[in-house]
Length: 67
Image (cartoon, rainbow, N blue to C red; front, side, top):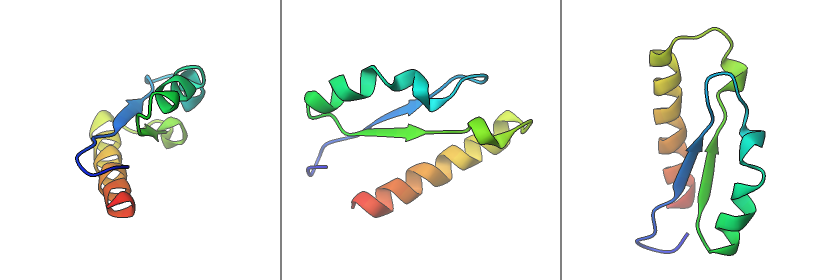
């Protein structure tokens, strides 16, 4: 990711999965858009607050990895 570029963070719906983005991600990549996909499908029957905390941690980790 280049300096100053913000990623697009894709978050699938409650009863969905990250595969929903299979057609969109290549198009964004072709347009040189950085894409981060947050997958919460394995979180089972957790509430929205737990998922929000997991999303926050995911964003923090991805920021640390990408600089």
